[in-house]
Image (cartoon, rainbow, N blue to C red; front, side, top):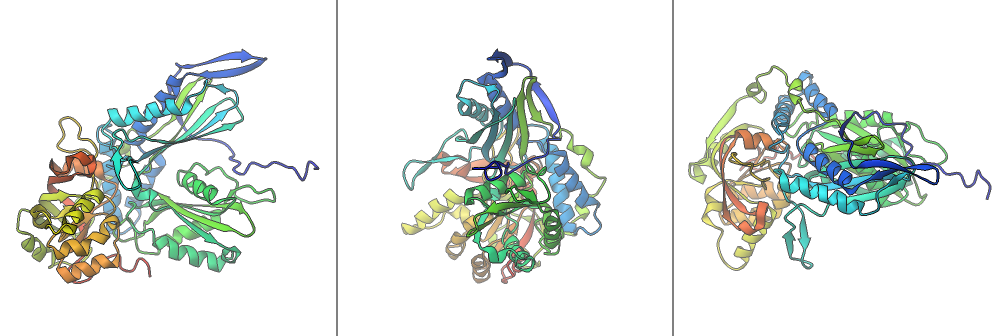
Length: 540
């Protein structure tokens, strides 16, 4: 085989790393000569320290570039009032989370670690175990949520109680550094990762743009926009496509070439990125409740592919844009520098004027009276809720359905109060609540008609768009769905949630049924009792 026929080309040739780093420690790292070569010795404690600090920081702090993009929305005269309301809410949330007590989102995510271990790095083994120890330390010692469930059999699951296992992928590479990407991926944005098995017929300008116009709309708002949208076209396998989607959404592949070549390397298509970003700005979806800023930015990566296969991947990083690079070199342990002072991005602005008039609703009234008040206002109306709400999400809804299946009724509390789809992070000492933002409403869609027919779920509060079956049920039974701002969980805990107590199923942890007292809890009417749905045009 000639040299030309056997040419190796790196599929992801990154041109450099301009990431700013902060040194964590010089300890646990040394060097020694072996056969005339310097080996960098890394103790397990170095990996544990780096992983712990990474997940502590990314749960509370954001990259400066992300915060600048939020400020851009506030300064843009073309941004809608709803865009600006959400952007300001997210900036205020970032300021609270930067106090390192309340995490920015209640869903503190699956811990994901990708490591590339240079050949001159020597650890002696056990790298995944040492990294796992750091992950467990962060999640058990900070006010983070345990979201991982382990299957006991095909159907029964139990919460692991420490947010393990982490997803850890380690690779052997050249060089004298151990480089990492740390991500905390919440369920909402993870669920908005899609693979489409297409063909060569897609690869023309008209078909490609039409395809993305249709598919991007299906993302909806459940994963807390504005999004960092990632699109990958091609791939040597489906798993390569989806892995690239995740890395591109984290800006990990920003230093790729911007043109292709005959040896099969990945590249970014900057022209397509700009075209799709403009497309998203014309959709009207905006930052959760209508407007221009459905996406902060777009990354489009083109990959080589098998001639008979054209996988396409789409994914997002949400408002909780939680990732950071790390590295261990001969000089020590480093973590990407995140923004500790997000207040510098706050404008002088009266946020109470950003969404027009606000309807204040006392939740201590009977449910019929609450519904009567809501019925007076159109969709998109901003409301402020004060009083008791019941909190229940996936497992709790399944438990309540089991009662109905046994011929029992729904509990009275589920009929008397609005239901908030959420699952809290741990409550810090001295606080009434841990971070407590809304979860994705769509996961509870299948229960709505059944529960409303029994007098429950008449007013629901969560995030994101819902299926038409929910709109139909609300019209039939006189119910409402209110959308709350996704991604601002620390702010809700700090300013709006005054009391939290378990009502039923304490053994379910964050999936228990809770009763909370709220004050001026912000939300918008999304689905009303007349069959109107703010997001009805998303898929058209």
